[in-house]
Length: 187
Image (cartoon, rainbow, N blue to C red; front, side, top):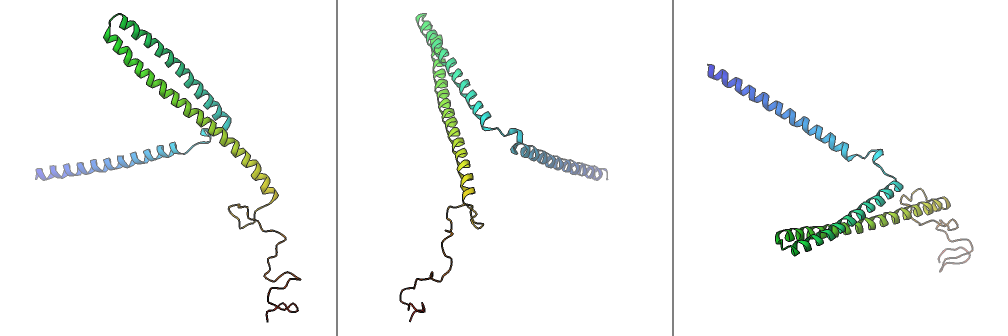
C-alpha cells in the first residue's frame, strides 16, 4: 500500500514538473518573440538622414585610412625587426617577425578592400540621392502639368489626346471607303 502511494506521489510530482517545464518553455518563447519583434522594428530614432549618413561614411573612411597608415608603419617596423634578428642570427625571432609581417600584409590588403568598398558605396549612395532628388523634382512638375487619369494606377505616360474623337462614327465631312457620299452607308 505504501509503495503505491509513493508511486502515485512520484507520478504526480513528475506531472507537476512537466507542467512547470512546459509553462517555462512557452514563457521563454513569448519573451524571445517579443525581443525579436522589438529588434526588427526600426524606431523613428534609428532612421538616419542623408546628411548624417554622409558624415558617418566620411568618418568611417577616415578611420579606415588611419588604420591603414598604422598598419603600414607596423609593417615597416616588422621588416626592420626581422632584418635585425637575421643580423643577430636569431632565426626563431626572425621567423616570428616574418609571420607577423605576413599577417600585417593580409590586414593591409583587407583594409584596402574595405576602403575601396566604402568609397564605392559612398559614391553610389550619393549618386542615388542625386537621382532621387532629380526624379522628385521632375515627377512633381510633370504631375502638375499633365495629371494621370483615374484609371492609370501606375502613372504611365499614355495620355488620351483631348482633340481625339472617342466616337465610332466618322468625323463630319469624311465618308468611309465603299459607301455612298450622300448617306455614308455601304451599298
